Image (cartoon, rainbow, N blue to C red; front, side, top):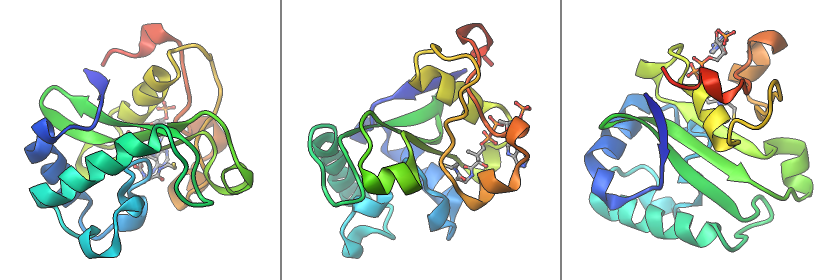
Length: 161
Ligand SMILES: CC(C)(COP(=O)(O)OP(=O)(O)OC[C@H]1O[C@@H](n2cnc3c(N)ncnc32)[C@H](O)[C@@H]1OP(=O)(O)O)[C@@H](O)C(=O)NCCC(=O)NCCS
């Protein structure tokens, strides 16, 4: 079942396995907050890196960092003990996000795609409130999809997998 949980060191092994599944596809890590890590830590998957990341993500719930962000909730998408991806919800947009990022950024690890996790995570992130809002930010993956096939929000009833 797709669930959203707060980032936590308690799930270090699951986070590491998820990051390793992405491999070198760092540009795919939408919604992970990975880009806010300092350069020296960005390619690491050790416990210290996750500790730094969790602290940054907690701070970014309240504060803006650069011109590229606004206060955001960063959540992890899990299926049982396995971590399957990331999702970020930003409630107010600045000029950059209006053009580039939108309200929501998300990604699913390569080994768990096409199982409906993105669609269900979007629904959970928005509380299942909207019925068909397409909230995907612009990325090569979503631009390649016909609009009707992009992950979009459906009713809460269709969220369980
Ligand atoms: C885009 C992404 C999040 C989709 O995750 P997913 O869990 O595979 O998506 P879902 O299984 O929930 O699929 C949702 C819909 O999109 C469609 N879809 C997903 N990936 C697709 C692809 N590569 N090509 C065409 N359609 C695709 C599915 O068929 C599904 O449509 P349906 O509900 O009508 O069947 C994933 O490919 C990813 O992480 N990409 C890299 C990061 C990214 O681009 N994030 C989005 C921008 S913020």
